[in-house]
Image (tube, rainbow, N blue to C red):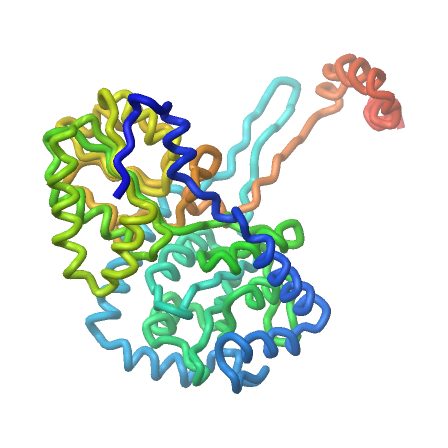
Length: 431
């Protein structure tokens, strides 16, 4: 695990050294993804089946792509009561949180009878991609679909890859069943994104595509953006722990490893002015990693993408955190809320040592679909508002048109748009 210090580097230089853009050095992959997307655009189901057979299920057919009601029933039975109770609890917390985010229409009566406002309309059909090739993530389905359900989206279409036998993991289907999402297809990867973007004979075209996935999935979302909307481009999970000398090394190590186990490319960084934490944290990492099922991947992440950044004080530590603009920030200090205003760029901020990032990953409320790769400088985590379109509303009386006419004439004349002036003055003439 690297030890870096701000003694010879600026906060930005450290962040540059530790950061890796999701889409860096992927030219070969992007070319391959473009080929898949174009094939699906032009050939529809035939291309979807071709790539699904190549990457996932060799016997996939158009008839097998939709998940049947019988498959939902079997999945619900296989998942079991304990799992479904956990799903119900998580959904309730996530729903409650996102209901508070629901935007409201507003209208403002101005002088001369002018009414200005905004109208929010749910997107009619969204597509959700849930990964499932190397692992199963029902939590990602909850965190992506529930905000859409709260928003009142007319239709949610689910795409998730099947195994080599053409089966989707029961946990994913049981979760979809609990959420009432029965329009589901056994397709994943770039071909699923392309199918949702353009529509095929079997898979309907969506207006916006949501959900995490591999770099191949993110490249496909990048390529189809403009044809459809996308929620964002998401890279490996990441965490930055901001700590002082009062923090417990075992908790810091646990929080770093909780994100490291996602995969070997997950950045895990401790930023602190407390040199006394360095050796104890390293020792705890070495001790705790041995207990993990995914210890090889976690240790590679700690070794290759992990770091301890030593700063002169907590103010400078916050500068480093803001430059990193990470997905997750964990504040482990003596008075954590006093440092919350200092964190300007982060997807989700867990305040205090008693608030593990893991709660946000699964149950506490906010969606765990969050900006990564320093994109928290300009983007935010998935929210209910992402499932709405916002329309401006204008009503003006004839008196209001007359009152604003001189301003319109001056600006439109300067821009050479006399048609704008005529459209306005037509309202001022007697019919």
